[in-house]
Image (cartoon, rainbow, N blue to C red; front, side, top):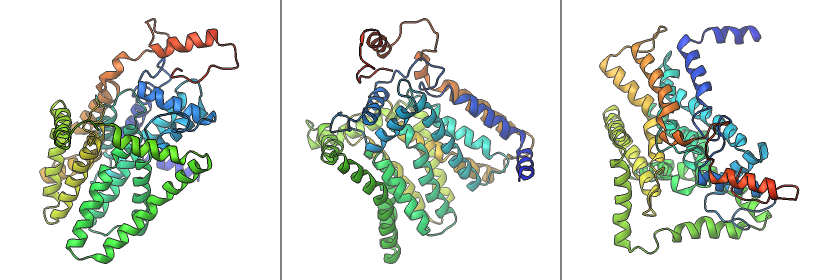
Length: 420
């Protein structure tokens, strides 16, 4: 067995080893949760961490602590707090694991696109487009945490269309489970799933494929129900299910933009969406180019293009439905750019007869590795304000609060507050 493992390791090309080494180095710099930094200064991350610490301390989200993101989001932060209660090391471990999970899915997408020796390079570059984006933030956002889940779903969809096959039973169940997990992390991020089911469902009805329509509907709903039943049961056991529904659904759906008229909200949605796209022309251009490539790639199956167009369109709609915008909202669309990179690059290479994937480095391999490494470690300019451990500079407020509380509190440990 060890001999087979050793032989498999020796067969890995040199550039793949380089990619893995660079990826291992880069995980320490892509998020402020990293142990090389003094703290994660993002207020959203601190709030979520407080929710997670409160949960493992006996306080229930929504019932005892008010916040509006999903229960699985706080379960992730509860796990992070369980690993390390007083700093973000636990969150860093989870973020790193999810990064490698996303890398694995991108490897599968690269294989699907026909890459062999260069699949590590292509996956690394796609990962860098997402984690090195300026809208990635400081680490720990729901948009980041759902990335490997959404990537897995898009891979399933693309694979079935590329192989011209109806989804298998296992695929439909998995897609439903992925949909449910994303829904219970942050339901405004479900646009890819909604777009797929709506567009594909309409296509099946138009083609009078009623059996397949009800099959995909029922099996996906079963998959969706699995995490949902568990979550509802857990909160019911904690006498917090009413608070869950009141805060996560009612408050979220009625609080944002409720003072704006229907017509005003309609225009506000597109102003927010358009403003973000105009201020990030690279992302906007890549979305358009990837869609054009899909329309050419599947020109004999036009419904595929319309389904993917519906997926990205509904994702924009669900993200900006409140009419409000935050600078990191566009990260949900950057997912589309990163995940479809292997497919688009593979199509261009095959149609323009470019050479890539030899055992020796090609120029494109080297270029993608260099740019990918620079993006992962320097593309996200938000981290320019990150405080390294030992750095002599005025710390952020959360650190000051933490120091004050540790100095003056006389009990066993300070009470819950957003500090670390």
